[in-house]
Length: 362
Image (spheres, rainbow, N blue to C red):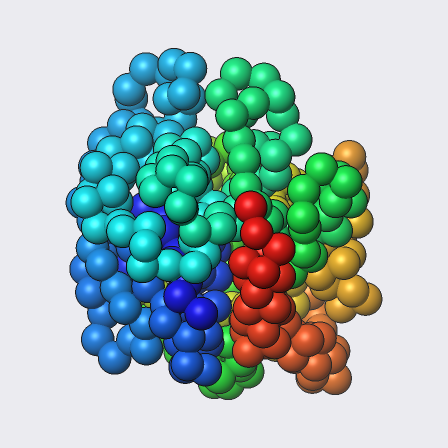
């Protein structure tokens, strides 16, 4: 099978969508499929798939640009800047199926190039299913031959309108597993609880709610691994609510497993995230995970999640306190739960769906 994954951030950043595409691509390439990735980052050594670098303008450059139809966020501006390089690198005749999670421009480009002879196209709901469900503005021009829904909500909402498959994200348990903390590696103290948020610094991640909850926990240190346009606002809030107990860091992907193992609990408060790789990465590392209660977080975390009520401000503080008191037996159950999300199984589900979409035709 000849498969293309195209996404602006590939090999440049390691957010959830990028990690998912690279993980699935690696598994499929190792099984013998011809897999190509097109992204904006540099090549990486010893990858089993083909990689083509296409230039773009990073989204950070667009943070203060105007918000217009089609260009509603800095992400849309970045996506548009990716298209010239993508089209230069992409020959539709080389592939049986293409996949992206970027809308509108990457989706449009992959569906337009090649005309009637283009390969089948699969859209993955890593960043939400709003292109598929909305008929307003540019969203009415969305289309695909198959839709990968990464949670049950999206699957139920779209199964009548599109050829769909329910396929969650996964985790590499060879990388993410319990082990010795490495706090010295990150300059973290060894004499106080460390609570980790792995998150972009944007409003939907609710980092401010995390600051408020941790302010009620004496001595606990909040580490935010991520960056984004709210970095200055969040630092100002933390200086007020968590003086001396807040740190924002960025670490390379290779160091993330050690960072998880160095935390006493992981906090993730997004309420509209499609999946959240942080959930399964924390579980696989044996680290208690605190989140808001929802059907989606219950589906991922099962009975092992520490879930707070988004309408009760004190509930996250209470769940964090429980997380800091978790036993070794509790942590073992987290690891067992995470094993259900191994990337090898997830990649097999992708391949089955790609095969179905190709054989059914456009």
